[in-house]
Image (cartoon, rainbow, N blue to C red):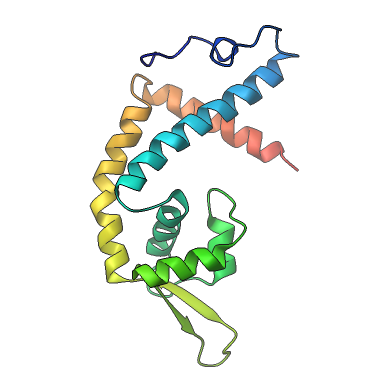
Length: 160
């Protein structure tokens, strides 16, 4: 257990009444854990001049390769939904991490690609972000992590 953390969610949030069911307790535990992991990762990325969304876009574009992706495709691949991807891309282009090019045949078509500067920024974070994730899940064996992944996947598959 992390230093200063209470054993249960009920203790952490100082809840005096029982949860309304195990589903509610599981849901709130998932939200609280996600928020804490995101906050920890966000602090780390901030030290490197990035937000979660910027880091996510860089990873998406690196994976897309030289062809790049349009704004809609980037938005669909984001781990966390973002309402204004266009403005995010504007800021990233201004920083020099991405470039946008209009299509030759259809000028309405705009492809976004990661620049060498964006690739360098991302490459510099590959090992440190891996170490961060290892620390975040320290003490959990791979079998438990695989079970967690399978459980979360099953939950997402049920969402309409």
